[in-house]
Image (cartoon, rainbow over all chains, first blue to last red; front, side, top):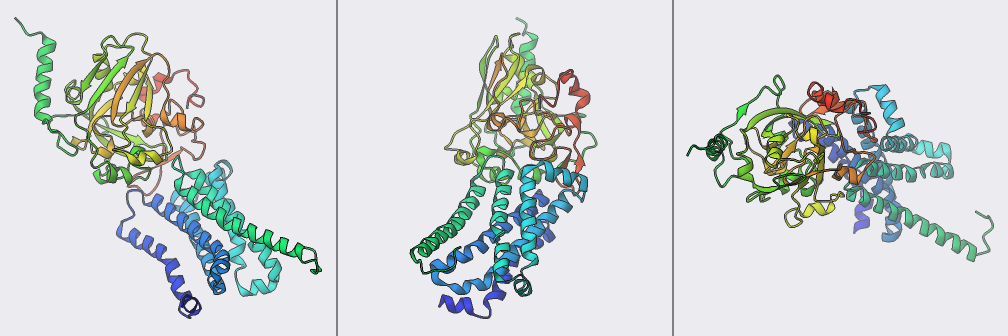
Length: 211
Length: 292
């Protein structure tokens, strides 16, 4: 049943619409002047939060595929990753434009001096090549193994994103702590499977190539 | 017997205040008798809705919209304020008595938050000095320590704020006695809404907003510099003085500019929030980078 839904032709367009919903909501609220007392702050926070949520959703695909036994979830991973990048870009441009008004000196100083901005910029810089090489053509060009290695940059990118949020808050760390906990679980799952795989490999000496 | 002048003056004040503040005073109620002042001439006021819906009052939650939502049923009557410490006449004042100590004035002040935003707010209050004088500070009183109300039952979200409560703040005695420093009981012509620190709060317009402690229950005249909440929570980021200063950055962000709520472009932040003419002399010879 669920697997039928996941493989249906409508699944990806529906997910795309869902991913765009927060942006559409923000745009509509901005249009109506309903972004509250400090609209720029609101846009910054919302786009940042959606970046993190979508990054974590992207990272949840692999564990879910294995645990739930829904391999077809892989169909959605690229879209979720690109949606995360889309919100990261909105987030960055909100900062560059509405917060700093493209004052490049101030921005350069900020990046060098403010560690939470450094972390955010690192996260974005790591996501950039991933978004750029997200097409089938790039997978073919790089070759599956190299492409996959490159795309492991999503782990440090997500970590830098969560740290960026953690370092921003003044005292109430509940929200960033929640993101950090989810990220930790998602990364730990990979580590566990890797260990299990390595152990299985060691137990089967017939394997030829040492990894 | 002739009524002493001080008594009949206080009686007149009492009458004036009694008219202004009916017994069952509550947030949002109109204040009838207050005098306009020249402070803030030419500033355009931040809209009432913004002033009362975008607040930092961590006892009621750490999101800006939390205080307006969760302070609604906060009980501000009866309310007393204890003034004690290095004073000849320490005592407890009832709120209504405090509001009769001095004529209420409207002071339109700029308010600069350490987070980089600002507002212009028409406070109603009177100089803090008027209350402190009632307690007759001794010469040993070098600082003033303030304490907010805190009660987990009324403020359950305070448990998650990440800073210790009750909130405490402090001023040097000359800062506390400065005519710009006021105790405020109202804004926009009415009693303070709960989210803005009802029923009585401090307003020190040349310092970052967090110095202007809300819902005060205790004021102590003390010999030594008292602990202050944000300094306890994060000493590298929040100093005791916390004067608005564009040249001393918060470690995590620049303080050079600010976003005036309601404006699109940021404006330059002014030293002492633009009150340098009045207060710069308090800090002559002090290294403001060291005493941030």
